[in-house]
Structure formats: structure tokens, C-alpha cells
Amino acid sequence: MKIYLVGGAVRDRLLNIPVKDRDWLVVGATEEVMLKLGYTKADGLFPVFLHPETGEEYALARRETKTAPGYKGFSVEYGPDVTLDEDLQRRDFTINALVEDEQGELIDRVGGLEDLEQRRLRHITPAFEEDPVRLLRGARFIARFSKYGFSLSHDTFGLMKQMATTDELATLKRERVWQEMARAMAEPEPWRFFEILHRCGALATLLPKLAEAMGTEQPHGDNEVSPPIKALKRAVALDAEPMVRFVALFYEICQGPGGSRWLTRSLPVKRDYLDLLDLLQGAARFFPPAAQQDAAATLDLLIRSRAQQHPERLSRLLLLGQVLWPELGDGISDWLNQANQAKESISPSALNNEGFQGSELGRELRERQLQAIAALRELPDHA
Image (tube, rainbow, N blue to C red; front, side, top):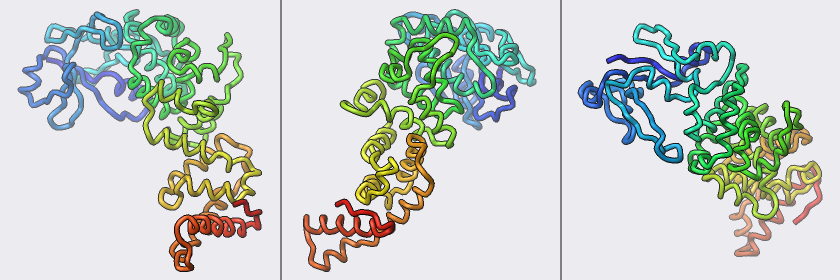
């Protein structure tokens, strides 16, 4: 029985990137041996075990054979007879198949070290195209490593283009596409994920409206940056969290009839992401400079964002305003804080004591809040 450190931990250490997680490969063992040693089974389908002390994942070496369409259409064999080389051959990219033995010696059986030095993302065998998830992973790894100079090898990109034209792509579950996209949104250059998918032809199948908005891909990269990608880049430049990056990318193409319904048909978007998108669509009339002279637009923004109860929602909206309307001037945040204080200074209970009730109370509350906000800058009052 031999144990190897494998994959991302080895790759990232060689790139001088902080190692977050460590995965281990076990050659020459059985499930029974692992359980006797105190490991617990972590997966019902694959021979993956958790270390009794560290909780890190230890996987038995395995072989995989394509038996059916889709990323789950594989038969898996594992046991003490599966060799290190056989396990490494089933992996996706050479830089993810570097291993270290128990003495810390580097083992490279697939040319991963040279590809690491050449800053090249390259598949290991033509079996790469049997798993459609690898197309998404290739795009995501470029979103992560392009800042270090990595690019897709010509042959790997050619395989990805072939994969985009086969029925395999249609077998991808919406949940898996969302999972990979959400991870890509957190990468240093998330726009690369969408650009790669667009260039290889997969985006037209997965997110056709985004592909249409990004336009026709020209040879040699002579393309004008599309508005959605520009917005995503601005969000990254402002160090926005993934949720804000997502809304920046999809806001423009979720306008008009149908709104974001096409998006939710394509992906199981998380509820808080959709809530922020809907919130921005409802509050967007505040952001053009002229609208900020409108007390009603300001009040509606504060009400929609529930600024008093959830200040983080207002912060995200303000950041999206900077991203999508970069011509906005400074001072919006201060203005909204002042306006919110003015709004909260009008107490419903005080109005109730004055005799206002029911719908009359609601109308009077809005009228006085508008007056209080307008008075801050002597703005015209628009009830």
C-alpha cells in the first residue's frame, strides 16, 4: 500500500500558490483495509475515504471506462491491482496529475511539469472528451490561472470544440453547469470562463442569450469586448463578491419581456443571486444622474433595498451602480445614508398619534418621507 499527494495541492505548491485542500491517492489497498485503518467512507459511488484525524480525502486508485452518455456514464474499477499510472491516465489535465510520494519526491508520468513551466493547460489523453464536465473545468481553470500566464493548448481547445458539437453537452445537468459557473465567478478572471465557452461553441447551447450578447467570435481574438463582459470586468476591478459579479454580467440581458425567466430555465440560480438581480431591476431608475434629483426614486430605492434592516443589500446595489453606470459621480453613498436617516426620522407611530390610520397613514407617511428627503438638497418633491 502506497499513499501519494495528488492534484491541486502539488500543482499549487509548485506555482507558489497557497494550498487550500490536499487530496490523497492510495495504491494497493482495498475498502476493507481502509475501514480497518479507521477511515470512513465518504462517497456511495466512488472509493473515497476520510482520514480519521485530518478529515482529508483518500481515494483508492481506479480505472474508468465509458459505458453511456453523460458525465456519469462510466464504469469504475478499483482495487489493489490498479496502478498509479492507470489512475493518472484517467485524470483531466496534466498539471492536475502531478504527485508526490511519501518521501516528498515529485512524480510526473504525463508531462505535467513541462506544461506547468510552459504555462499550458493540456489534456492527458483523448478520453478527455468522454466527460462533458471537463469542458467546463477547462474554462474554469483558465479563469483561475490566466493571471499566471496559462492558456489552453491548441489540441485541448480543438477537443473542446468537438465536445461542443456532440450530444454529450446536452447530457450535462443544469445543477452541474451552475456549480462550475458559480465557482468560476469567484476566480481571479471569471470572464475567461465565458470567453472560452463562447469560443469553443458551448455557450450557445448552455446560455444562448449570453452567447448572442457576446457577439460573433472573430479569428485571432480581434473582438470588441461585449457589454456583459465589460460589466463583469468592472465588477472584478472593484473587488466585488461573486453574487455582484453575476448580477453585473446578466443584468443587461435580463431586461425587457421575460426578464430573467430564460436564465432560470437554463440554470438553477441561487435564490439570493436572483433576489439581487430583481432588486436592481426594480431600483435601477435611481442610478442615472438625473434621477438622483428625484426624491421619489431615492425613497423607492431605500424601501426596496430594506436599507435599515439589511444594509448589505444597499451596499451591493451601490456597488452595482458603480459597475453598470460608471459615469456616476461620487457622494452617492453619503447621500443615501443621509436620505435614509431622513426617511427613518418620520415615525409611523407619531403619525398614528396625529390621527392617521390605514391607507391614509400610508399615504401621509410616504408624503412626509418625500418631503424630508427633498429638504436635504431642496429637491423637487415627486409624490
